[in-house]
Length: 183
Image 1 (cartoon, one colour):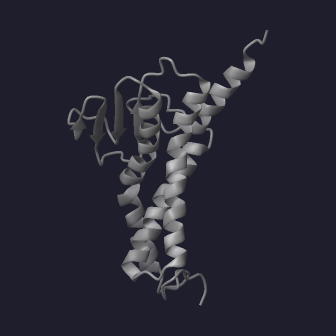
Image 2: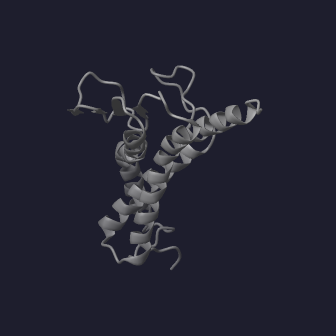
Image 3: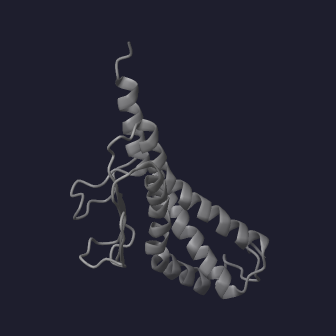
C-alpha cells in the first residue's frame, strides 16, 4: 500500500483513480469559497487599519450584493470564482499597513491549508470526508500559491492587462520604499 492518508484508499492505484477525480471536482467546486477565505484575510485587516468603506468581491462583478452594511459590501458569484478583490481606501495608510493588508490574504489561505492538512493527517476521516477535505486543502493551498508568487495573473474584465498577485504588489511597494532618498 502506497500513499494513503488516514483511510484505506490507495490513491496511486486504479482503485484510487475515482477518488482523485472526485477530489478534482471538489477542488473546482471549492475554489470560490477558498477565494472567500483569502479575501476575508484582506478584508479583516483592512477593516482594522482603514476608515472608509470596504468591498469584498468573489467572482465576476455583479449588481447583486449579498450584504451591504455601513462599511462593508459583499458580492459573491460562482462565475470566475478564482477571482477575488477587496477594495479599500489607502488614505492614511503607510507602507507597513499596505503590506499587512496584502499579506493577510495569503496568510489566511495558508492557515486554512495547514488546519485542513492537520485534520487530514491526524484524524481518521470517512472516505467522502477525506476526499472533500483534500479538495478543500488543495483549493486553499493553490489560492495561497497563486497569491504569493510575484506574478501578473490572468487578464479579466477588471484588469485587462492582468492583476498583480499579492506577492508582486508587496515587492513593488517595498521596492518603491527602498528607492526613496534618505536624508
